[in-house]
Structures are given as C-alpha cells and as structure tokens.
Amino acid sequence: MRFHDSIRARLIIGATLVLIAFVAGAGLAVQRAHADSVRAARFAQLRSTVYLLLAGAEVDAGGALVMPESFPEPRLSLPGSGLYASIVDVARGEAWHSSSVVGLNPPFQRGVAVGQWRQETLAAGDRAYLAVGYGVKWAGRTQAAPLVLSVLEDKAELDREVGIFERTLWTWLGGAAVLLLLAQTVLLEWGLSPLRRITREIRRIEHGEQAEVAGRYPAEIAALTGNLNTLIRQERVRQTRYKEALSFLAHSLKTPLAVLRTAVREPARLEAAVKEQVARMDDIVQHQLGRAAASGAARFVPYLPLAPVLTRTRDSLQKVYADKGLAFSVDCPPELSWRIDEGDAFEMFGNVMDNAAKWARHRVAVKAWRDAEGLNIRIDDDGPGFSDTQSVLRLHVRGDEQVPGHGVGLAVVNDLVASHEGQMTLTRSDLGGARLDITLPAF
Image (tube, rainbow, N blue to C red):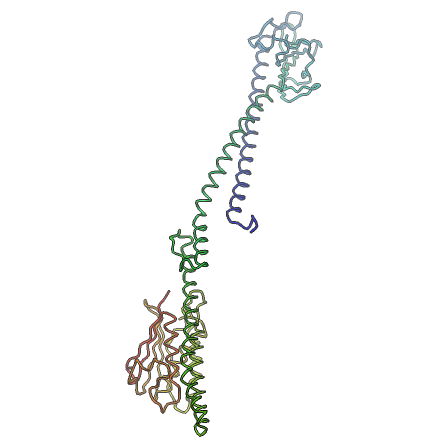
C-alpha cells in the first residue's frame, strides 16, 4: 500500500501542511507588524530629537547659529554613537553637526521645505540610516533664518532589535508548531483507533476466528458495522441455503432414481414410470433451485414499487384462467414500495395469486398495505379453502389431486417468506374460501 493511500497519512500530511501554512502566515504577519512598529517608534524618537535641537538652537545678532555645548541626549555628544544631528542654515550656507559626527560623513538631509517633515531610509557606503528632516524658518532678532534640521540613526540598531525579536518569534512558533503537530498526531491516532479495531475484527472474520463484528463503535461508523454484519449474515444464510438445497436435492432424487431403476427391469411400466419420475424430478430440481437462488432479505437492494408487480401478475393470470371468468381485484397504494428483489417479488406473489386463481370459483381479492409491523399481503378467494393448513406448505403436497399442479408453489413461497424473515399464515377467508397472509418485517 502506498503511503498516500492511507487515511492516517493523508490526515497527518494535510494537518502538517495546514499547520505550517498557518504558523508561517501568522509568523510573517507578527514579524511585519513588529518591524513596522519598531521602525515607527524609532522615527518618533528621531522626531523628539529634532524637537530637542529646536529647543537648544539660537541665532545671534549677526544671524549666526549658536548651539549649546551639550544636550539631554548623551549620544549626540559621543563620537560614533549611532545618533547624528545636523542643522543647516540654507541662506548662509553654514552647517552645525553634533559631536557624534566626528570622523564620519553621514548623508544628512538638506532639501527639506519649510514646515515639512521627511522621514526615510538613506544609505551611505556600507551603512544605512534612518533619517528624519524638518524645515523651519527661524525668526532671529534682525532677520529670519531658514534652517533644515536633520537627525540620523544607524539602522544597524533597528536591524539588531528586529533580528532578536525574529529569532525569538520563530523559535517559539517552531516549538509551538511541533507541539501542535504532536498533539494532532495523538488526536488522529485516537480518532482513527476505531477504524484500526474494525480492521482487526474483519481480519479475524476472514480467518474464521469470529462470526461478525462484535465491538462497540462511535456513531459515525456504527451504521457501517451494522450493515457489514447484515451482509455477513445474509451471505451465510445464502451459503447455508445452497448447501441445504444440494443436500435436499440429493436426498429427494434418491426415490425417483430408485423407481426408475426398478422400472428398467419391467419394460411394460417403463414409459409411464419415466414420465412420472422425470416430472417429479423436474419439480424437485426447480423447487431446490428456487430456494437456493432466492435473494432473501436485502437491506441494500433498491425499493421496488409493488403495485406494478401485482397488476402485471393479475393481468397474466386473467389470461391463463380466462375460461373461469374470475373477478380479480388488486388493492395496492401506488406509492407502496419495499426493499425486495424483483425476481423474488414475482416468484412470491405470482405463486400465491396463481394458487388462489387455481382454486377460486368466481373471485380473487389481493390487498397490500404497510403498517408498524412491516409489509402485509393478503390474498382471498372463494374456493373450498384449505383442509390442512400445515401439510400444503410441504413439497409435493396438493389440496386436490384433480387440480393440475405438483404441490411446489406454496412450499417455494413459504421458503421465500422465511428467507425474508417473514411469516405466512393460512386461514379461512371472508369470501368463503382460503385466506393467505404474508407479513414481511421492516428492517
């Protein structure tokens, strides 16, 4: 068996792919949100530094920019600290740089319009910077000075902070994904355990170690096990029916064969004996084949509408017994249907209706209905009725030797009804003749 043919493998692979996609998507979203948040916070700090520069800047009487020797932000006084500041007097072409710029040449912004903020990422050489610039017109004592304040921060600090967060994020997400995958695997193993149990039971049934599925299973597969047991029982009944039919056939043919062997020694009786015994053997074979071929109770055959079956059978019998002029009525709701093989239905109803037509004087009535017990079929006739309701259900027992037939029909029907787990009863009809009731239980 290939790996992808396993339900367990499919579920695990599917859960793994979904989990990886979810964790990756969530991780990337959190990573992006954190990076944006840290970048926004850094730009906000740089804006605060611009305000700090504005608070400390002065313009003397000559219009020259005067800056304090130190700032509350100590990194502006520490060379190479990563935070750099510049103020450019656009009109005079003069520029002031913080002490942190010593020995460096950061890409300060210069072309920022008055009243505008500009924040961006700049590159110079092998370094990148977060830059915030602001243009202002400084009102001095004698004249206004257009100034551009620019603050830069080495982007390596941002990258380092983001990198630490990303490593921590993916470490925890990876660990959580592994734990979730293990938990899912355990849950799948637990959820699929009934399927493994039923597989083991089926193997034991195949090896003859048990008769049917005996374990209790969840509701989702209880119907499956029930149907499986029904199939197993039906197959065993069918096999038993085949074996019994062969056994009965062999036993039943012994007497006709013995008569034929005796008749061979008496030429005068040979022709009559052959005809009689061949007819008898044909009846026996037909009866046993009918028993063996009966489908029996079947949960999985489609529903069969019964009205057409009864109507077709009635029409055929009216032609066969046209000389008797029978009044043949069928009372069956058109929507009535039942799970039964069509061949079994024609065999069952055809035999009992033929029997009624054979014995009836003037009238045969067929009624079909369904109630809480199951399907009911009733056949009434106005003939002489049954003198012995038990013996006529046995093979080759006939109610009247003057009526054509071999006593096979009702015996076949009785076997068919029994194979459908039903019951057939013979009583006296309100019409004065025989009443035959067939009841088939609902599944």
